Every structure is written in structure tokens, then in C-alpha cells.
Amino acid sequence: MNKDELKEYLPHREPMLLVDEIEIDADGICHAKYLVKEDEFFCRGHFPGNPIVPGVIQCEIMAQSCALLVKDEIKGKTTLYTGIDNLRFKHVVKPGDLCEVTARLKGRRGPMFFCEAVLMVDGLLCCKGDLSFALV
Image (cartoon, rainbow, N blue to C red; front, side, top):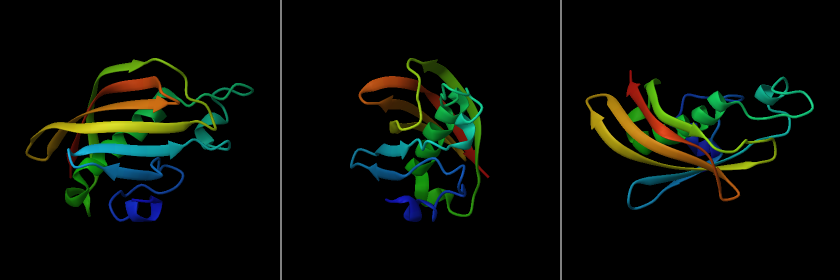
């Protein structure tokens, strides 16, 4: 799916739409990509002269990727994140980096979904964690 197709499912819009493309394989594993642009609003002040993608934005990239695992259920609903557990940051993400997210659904309880995700750049693990969200 490309960015225009993603907009049919995710309520996010620029500048907070943080998935460019996605593929969900036969095993239900999401493979998403997001290219961090040089002029991203979240890098302008974080940090001048040495821009780094904030950790919370890395989490949001993973979170949007996770939501797309249940794309057929999210149309017309809002995904509200309820938890981020076991989160680790291993390498910085900078403008110009292509973030590649791999995510899988670990479980579900009613409108609650539990996922695990990793964000990598050039084969380096940058961020990983367990995310949960509710559909409302």
C-alpha cells in the first residue's frame, strides 16, 4: 500500500502521517517504511545543528505501523495507544534515514490490541518495544 491508500485506513494526515508504504505478508507481519525528510518539524529544534528524530516520534512510526495490522477494523475509528512496554533505543535516527518497521500482532482482547515492533535503519536496530492500543 502506498501513502494515498494508507489514508483510507489511518486518520493521520501530514505532518503526522508517519508511514509511506506498507506490506503485510501472509504470516500477518507488517513491513512498513518511512523516509525521514530533511525538513521534518520534529527535527528543527531537536537539536539545531545535529537533528535527531525524537524517541516519541520513533514510537509513533511504530505505532502507526502496528495499527495497520488491523486495517480492516480501524476504518472510521480512532486508535488510542494504551501502553508502550519494554521500549529500548539502540541507535539514533536522523533526517534522510529510511525507517523500516517490522510489526506483528501478539494478541487481542475486545477492542484492545497488543503488538511488538522494531524500527531499523540500514540494518541497525534503532528502537523496539511492545505497544498496545484500543479502537474507539
